[in-house]
Length: 194
Image (tube, rainbow, N blue to C red):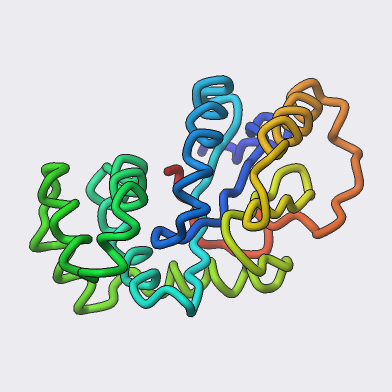
């Protein structure tokens, strides 16, 4: 029987609380790409959903992402949808299905997932957890117990994330106090990498 891996052997987690109809999240893509390139698997970057009521198609986009993730293309799907934020705003859910088709996914299955709501529980769980830890807008980052709000400005956030990640990876951040708690332990839903 395999022993569960210890917390010390797991990479630090960067949660990116995102909404796929959010222009600020689209702007944050460069930072997320740079972090993925810099750290690779040493930093576990996880996309978390926080659909905002002001965006009519955000909830559907989150569910479509989950279906794309289930089909093995979560991150490419998120990037492609964020690249078409204005079109999603104008044309709605048809864009979500088109993006799936363009990426070679089973677009009919994405469409069916939007109808049957099979991924709604995951999205609702993320949103509830986000509210519980103080997420109010997107993008918001949580790393090492610190919440960084990128909805107001992205300026300097990548540098702050790098400093925290480097501290955590060097082991000196293990005993740092967690001002908002360890969000990764609030919810038992398996996390998804973008």
